[in-house]
Length: 320
Image (tube, rainbow, N blue to C red; front, side):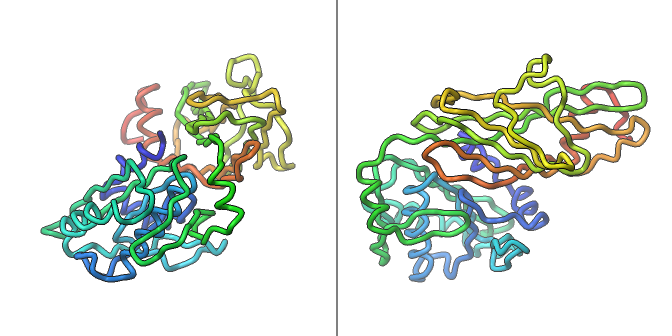
């Protein structure tokens, strides 16, 4: 699952990138600072219980302990602003392990924690909380409330939420991947192709999926489609006049079953062969299907990764 990969990929470099790029909190990511490494402060325990309940009752998520996110961007979303390292990361980790079984009722299976050490006893801690069909889960440790995750916040669940969850069915969970696909060199131009793929990592089938992509920095849809014959995995719905927003959708006949991926389209980015000027590419998107809430997020392809991929394919000098 992508959540597992993201958890494994949290390193000091990734934490620096959270601050550098002012990473937003979102449906699957929460930043927290702590008061005491020994987990004796009531607010720390309540934050943990709330997150366990909220993420497990929703689509799962990751907490990174030691990052402050008290500044909102232009859209009013909290984003990472500074590092607040834990003074005794291993002690905090041991306390998390101790209280994990007490954080909710019933217990959420599969919660994992890990340390990202810096120097001495200092560092950061990351917590992975998977979603589960065994809920709903009540947050304990002084909370005694049910929570859900929506956007970048946790909310107390209403009575109708609980009614729905006590009888809830298996549901789909869609994730978007943008992968380097191909590079070609035509005359004085480099053409980079990106493959856009939707994967259903949930337990239910996703009917009528819809995807919207917001493009910038010269990105555009590649004209030959995913198969070289102009075909897309989802029907083209519309695009804005400046071609910066592409929309794709499917009717009731389009179903993405659990653990199945669907290649939707390819994107193209052109560079000058003499002066490629590689830069970060951020692609914002919206993803939804029948019976699940719309999910808004973005994927960042950093300049170094782009340069390395293109160089590996057409042998550009590293100094270019």
